[in-house]
Length: 108
Image 1 (cartoon, rainbow, N blue to C red):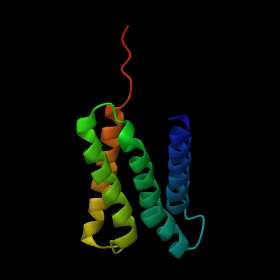
Image 2: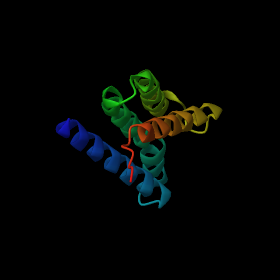
Image 3: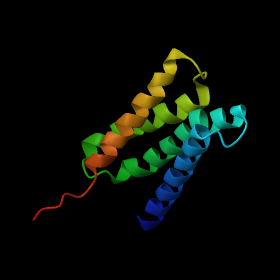
């Protein structure tokens, strides 16, 4: 599980770097768009794939896989500027919400 967490962390950090590069226009417009609107979603989706089998609530495992598929396929196949791009955001938000369900609870 440690190696899985390391890989997932690396993917998440790489995805955030892509998003920041796109937001701050660090490269040409084409590269910024590629990073923030395609590669970001592909990396986040891959991170969700890695996280899915380790969710504590097994009922959410398939939902996390669905979020991962939506992000990856959305990043690969949905044309930029299309109305369907909102699906990628739905997959992203769903995966984030599901990942929060996997956090340990702290009790005093």
